[in-house]
Length: 317
Image (cartoon, rainbow, N blue to C red; front, side, top):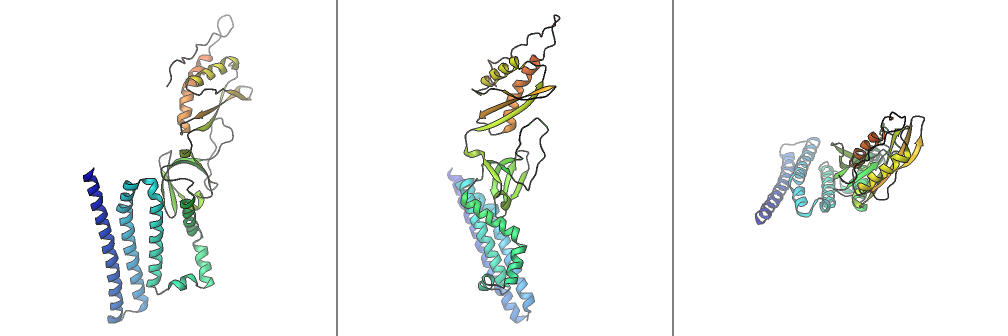
């Protein structure tokens, strides 16, 4: 443990020294460009872009060091959730510092930026509407905390439509499900249940309907499925209810919610602690299929339905 803490301190010190060296190098290069402008008679149109390029290169290098080392160190020390706000603030200040430094390299003062012409302000406003919208939305996420890094969420957004499922259903919410892995200046990264990481613009996620599954211990899941009309519901429903009781869903009863000439639909509503819908469906349907199969017995020689074998309920999954 002591050796691990020592390694962290050394990495902290090394990262801080590298950032300081880069900062000093940037200042020296900017001074050299100013000196060369007088000695070599460099025109202003050449010297200012050179200084702006130096600022961008030094800012990019510092940003890389922060992302590669410092943020990981903070995450190890304080945890992912505690470092989200700090990381966002550092990124925001670094972005503002680089932008103002580049403008200063071109000879644009802070007062000119703040009290600039209406035309320039309108152009920047229109061109950067999406970018600044995402940035402001990221600040709102930081302030109001509808979710944090590590939370499992479902979100619905009209910008990301989805196709309706093919299995029997009621009203279905086109949700995207996953775990929040990062909140940056522009995007919220979500590790989806299908595997890939989805980068959602903050401006969209702030407008979306979000279910934070990590802030509740229980949830309700509705499952609807069709069975053949030849199956006697007076025999099937009690067996399904006993199966649900055996799985721990006490008080849950199946209901008939729809009838067609060939099938009738059963609805099961469960109150569960599990967060993954597919896991819950698999658990119930894996026990439901044998019940339906054993209830679909062929007719006996005397024309009556042969008795179905009861599903073993003494064993839980």
